[in-house]
Image 1 (cartoon, one colour):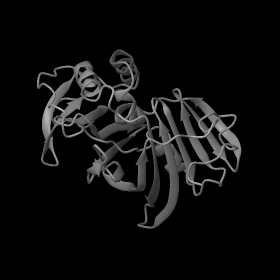
Image 2 (tube, helix red, strand yellow):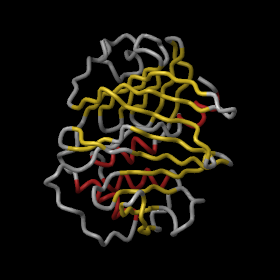
Image 3 (cartoon, helix red, strand yellow):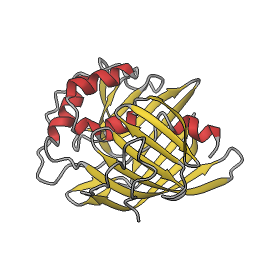
Image 4 (cartoon, helix red, strand yellow):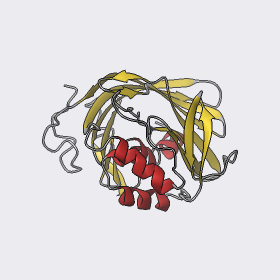
Length: 256
């Protein structure tokens, strides 16, 4: 794993998002503030959004010379606020663990770094359906999303709500939400002097919801990463200690 991959993925590791069940009613159209959009996302799935999920991810990194590097990641979610990513294989000892707004990075079976981290894609793709909307708004505000700025546009032939920027302005941090399904579809975020653009594509039905099994990262409009999901399951039960920093590496793994 290169420094570049870690730099762009640790702040904003891509996940996938599921959509509303067929019997959900469309959300009202009068959403004028980011806080309104967050509250509407939460309300659209209150009590319905799944709490656990697992999947196997094919991760394709695109190098500057056109070369590619492919690895498999084994990912698990326990919401709100817990994401575990085993890189290479479940027994590799290389793992990223997000827990309660902190990150723990393991290399070769040893903790190499840890510290506070707000993961914007975990917040917007998943935690928003479990977290109190006021708490979620506070977290997103701390990540420099201007919640006072909201506009509507068309993205991939669907109406979306864009929070954090005025129409046509891709410079500020902003997140895009499908206006009918009320799910997160795009993130534009500054990473130092670069701009990262994350997109969730190719939605398909998964149980009563949907999933975007293709996710792409672009840095300054250049494709740098693709993620493709397989073996997606919800309702998993995890072994004791699976998401605990002191016990994660010795806990039984769901994939086995």
